[in-house]
Image 1 (cartoon, rainbow, N blue to C red):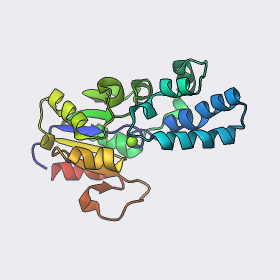
Image 2: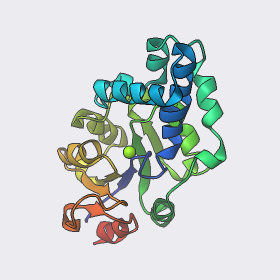
Image 3: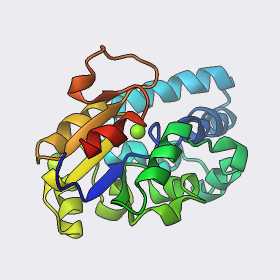
Length: 217
Ligand SMILES: [Mg+2]
């Protein structure tokens, strides 16, 4: 791949294990809901899962804790609740991602392009944030979900590069793989659980370390 200047990473499920944000959406929030509405925790979890799916991840409100607190009429401050899950043991970085970041650092501008709101994102990247030239929370910084290429175009414009000069790696087939590809970004899909086919030529990575060779090819 010639003339790559920027390597972009999604955050949740790509650099950081999803368990961190999951503990908010599937533990802390259902717990508050069950207390408020007087239903069992397991039932609250099912109700919330249905509501999350109903709204869907193309809607910016899906990502915003404030929206759900308001919708469920919860009296707590979302920031306080999120703080309670922000303990080091909740944040696990993927070894292969850390290796890739360390190996590429200094050779390319590394960035994060995430849909995660800043309140989650900054804590998730604590300790490795200095490795990144820029950390974009599309939801907080642009008020948009990276569901179409306009968000990626804003990123490349801000960096002063063409799509072709960027690599993006993520674990959402549409948002991280298909959409950025529309403006020429070289995309890779991280599939550690091997849920996709074997077609690695399409840019499917079982282990992120494989991307290094591909970038240098
Ligand atoms: Mg992700």
